Image 1: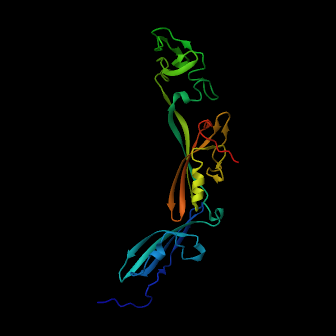
Image 2: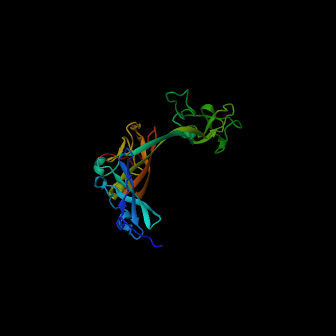
Length: 279
């Protein structure tokens, strides 16, 4: 039996009630809408990426992706997801950065410990002690270097020369807490963040700061760190925060920029990592 059609022919899609709009609190707005349409309707005009939202209030939202359900009676249900930036968020140009922090311990070589050569505040004493070191007696603890015993510092720390040189290791078993140790667990803080921008020139600008350190919460005009993040510069070393990773993907008509920032309480050496300095 042939289908008998009555009422709206659905040659043009009908927006269904119940469509939603959501704001993530940082300026990213999303919306999901559903339409009913005839099987023969060309959905491209409705679903092409970048097509504006059907409600004029949310025309700043653009189509991101869609799905189609081919229902009975020659009716198709089209679901379209839209994304955009709230006009009240930086005039709709970009969202506020959404940043989280991961704090923990990671293995570092023992010679990088700030308490290795000289005692620092809060520690009982230095690990290896300052030079000059005392040459060991033959066939005792230190291996021979250049035909003679190496030199011993605090806690059995062994160096090739009286003034230091190559660190050989902790060689005195009477100090079991140090003997043979080459690493220690150092505090580490890594920030992960995401920001959505509407122009690819913004993406290029952010990428230009990759590998650069800063003493504030910002790289250029981009406030990528929250106000509660520790900032500053270590004298004669460099700033404490380094933009270490920037990843980009297209998200509807926007660009999703995911970044990582590494914090170093001892500073990032400005001879190694270029420092961002505001012009």
